[in-house]
Image (cartoon, rainbow, N blue to C red; front, side):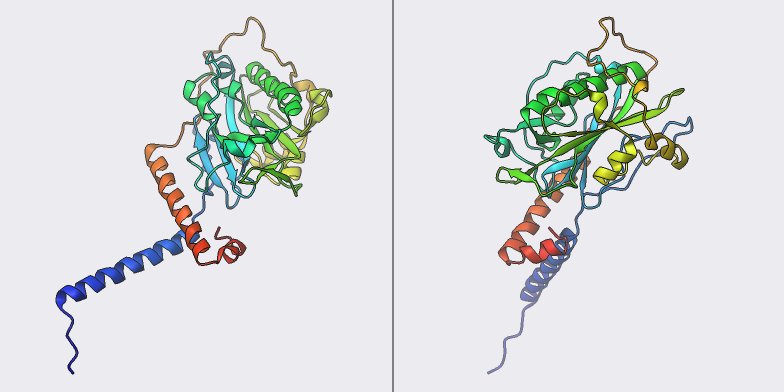
Length: 335
């Protein structure tokens, strides 16, 4: 019996199926290697200004996310940011926006951020890393600090005590020096950790903060490492060099600085060069000579790209789950 010949219409149909499958396979392979890590994009302008001075060196495998006024690097393993970085000026700390709690998941995190439910009933505060009070200069910036990607589980006595005092002191530092560059976050090198919620958000044992004043004539930097617990000690007693914070966290702070300058600034600290007051002067006033250069949120194009990549990542997870190859995928860093 003679075989039926394939019609042109049938051939065209199977060809389109083959092309579609090929595209899906190529996209899936590409998805397996999707990463949020970005290259350092700091630069020195003709007037000597260093752009993005606050940004640490990129952390391999982490997604860098830009919100209004600050940038963070998201660590999916611990559902926490490895760092949150921002510039804080004298004029910004004098902003007048009122705090309006707006805690919510961060849609920019491609793998999904921690949720409100993760913290519910845990006994820990949703502790800000970029403090809401540092962003009173803009309603949008203030709102953006309430993304769960900017939160970390903090003991209430810590969050509302010594940590709040340090945040207030940094605002005074910004006011008195005109402008400072702040990087803060949890220490994620001393696990294992207690976890909370369905997403297993890590509860850090310690937190850090580094502050750089890059304004002549007294260029200086200082770091802090604090246990996640209440304390009656002075803020000065937690002060360390930036080099020490780098050693403890494994992060590289202020890589945009010229190497010779970075080595000198980060290797030492002097508490007498900094104010540790926690309240601004009653007659505090803005400085019109300060140029504001805060980080803006991602463009619409970036947001759409993040949304597409987020869906691609979720599809990738489903494929590995359906095929029972999740453990293999994790072993090779594909999840």
